[in-house]
Image 1 (cartoon, helix red, strand yellow):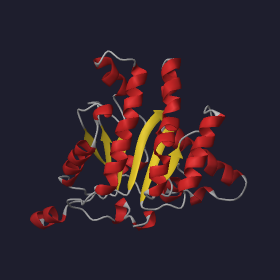
Image 2 (cartoon, helix red, strand yellow):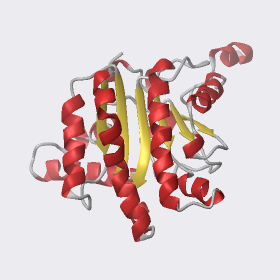
Image 3 (cartoon, one colour):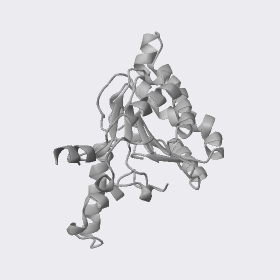
Length: 257
């Protein structure tokens, strides 16, 4: 199913959902995982890369077509310099160890977020990974890196304003579909399910626009321990939800007349 075939909330039917097409995950808990073991926080981030590998391998087997993971936020720059340096190295570690398998298995990689502040070497690796996998379509992996939901909305609005200023668009052209098409996630369906491990229960500036009708599942497991069984548990919780997209379930309408 292509992204354009995914029903919009306005046209979606209510009821119990099937397996989610698009799952988004906040990869949280690396530092606490390391601290519990008396290890440097940086080693927790390295263990988190292994959890990402397990999850990316498991997702297609569970009929997920899009997976978006939150790796580094625009607010993470405020962390200690050594930890930021380790976080900056994570995409390199992941691509160096897994890009051949991802390409071989038909995974398309897209990195979303600001490019400002990233090293030339990291940008080259990101560009190479995206170019190498751009024709793959069996599975889509979005990596949100140096990303913030608020910043993404602001940048989309700024681009639209620039189009208006140059006469390419008029103010009346702006609607939800137009703004959504200008976000970093353009081309992906909105997430059906957003998962946050680690016990925290907030979005932390992740996919704020796209999360409008997503189901949220919070799990009490630190990200480095995450694996297929935890993703399956999240999908089981999702399957028990009643997705109405602001409407009333049909059985309720019949019952109330």
